[in-house]
Structure formats: structure tokens, C-alpha cells
Image 1 (cartoon, rainbow, N blue to C red):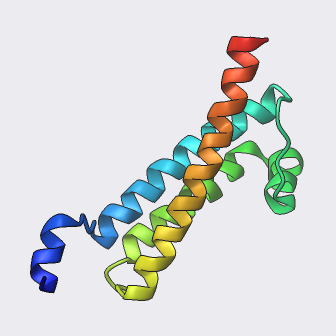
Image 2: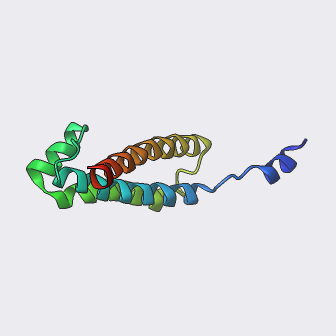
Length: 113
């Protein structure tokens, strides 16, 4: 099978698509994290983000959580590379795991307790 034929069977999203998906995951993560922290159901494990959330301002927490993927989205054309593609894929996989944890605690707190 040639590479062209193989690409027909496998979905290869563009870097822009991956950046947009990462941005959406970051927005959902920020909202769920804020919900969990505000209701004291979870603890922010990242000490920098915890400091920003509790000591500085929740708005800055959102700006950082959402702003970094926005910057990546704006700059993705300048840094288009296979390494970026791989890094985005790994980051999205990790964020999906975090999102699964958020869905788990939300289900437990709001539906089982």
C-alpha cells in the first residue's frame, strides 16, 4: 500500500484543526476546573495555576488557560512542523485524560452524592 492509499484510510487533521481542538479542550478544562475549585470539590495540582487562581485573580487564570492555545493558534503557520504535530497530539491526549477526570468528579459530586 502506498502512502497516498494509506492516507485515505487514516484521518490526519491539520495543525490548525489540532490547535482549535486543543483550544476547545482548554476552555472546557478551565470552566470545569473553576467549578471544582469554587465548590472546593477538587484541588489545583499545578502550583503556579493554584497561586494565580487563589492569590492573584481568577480572570488571569482564564487568560492563561485559554490564551496560550490562542497564541499557538495564531502562530501555527510560522512553526508548522512534524514535531509540533506530535507535541499537539500528545498534549491533546493528556487533556482528554484530564477532561475524563473532570467528568468523573462532576458525575460523582452532582449525581451520586
